[in-house]
Length: 217
Image (cartoon, rainbow, N blue to C red; front, side, top):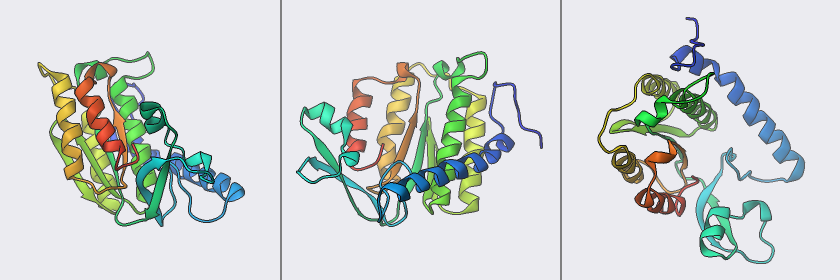
């Protein structure tokens, strides 16, 4: 099956082909991590064994690479991310399908860029042994693990890239996705948000703060 190169949508073949790129990204991170520290890795591509638990005020001796810049900016006081033994991590993608995602550059639409980024995250999560989930405008791919999980997520991302959802209130639709996600995942999950800026309001920001308190967003 030939991948679509028009930039109008992302087909499944194209998203499947991103597996090799995800492997390169993950391998590169692991090499850099191994060269500067021993023990579990803590980052966007965290190693198996540890996951994000919470953020607390910075204390002398904390690794500066683990500073939580979102909480630090919000509170005006330095905070560090705290990691704990991994339980059952989920990698989740939230995709905005408002009309604003139907715009973009000459090379591709925002909806296509979102599908590609979501696929990269799904592949890296799958390689790390995570359960995978995705949600968009009421459509949900529940958390599961394995080859069937990555195929379900990639199929959903491809489908979502082909059509925006005509709604009188795209902000409300995105907020509902944000507020529904915590019921699908456990604390310490890895969450990627792919949205048009016009779909975000004060309620969205409050939901994001709540997510960031318990997940790696």
